[in-house]
Image 1 (cartoon, rainbow, N blue to C red):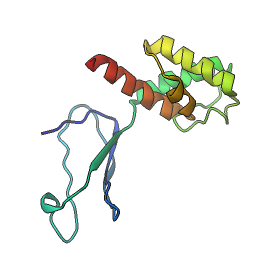
Image 2 (image 1 turned 45 degrees about the vertical axis):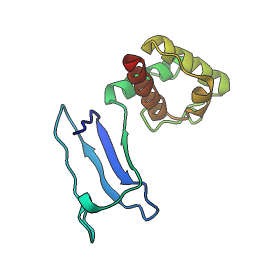
Image 3 (image 1 turned 90 degrees about the horizontal axis):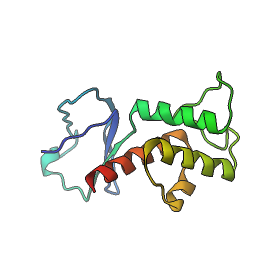
Image 4 (image 1 turned 30 degrees about the vertical axis):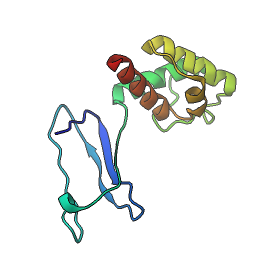
Length: 140
């Protein structure tokens, strides 16, 4: 039996004829989650090549990242920065992005590899990466 702790999850089949099985279910606290497959065969007999479960970062992490981004870019207090905010849209150049990543590393006590840092384009991506790094750090 597996367990998932997340604020949002999506389960999809990775098969070429992939169909979304369940999506956008919000979780609060620990809950048992189940889903069913509506197709010709029942889900338990369906052969899947792989099953991908994606978990979005906690809202608190996204909010904390948003505050750090606002501070690093010296944005006005009334500026809206949320998970969908793109660094480039907020006016960040490559140097600003490096400074944002350094601020995140300091705040969360993590170390971000240069390749990972260069691939971050939104607040949500940064928050997801932070939670992944914290999880890996805790299991090491």
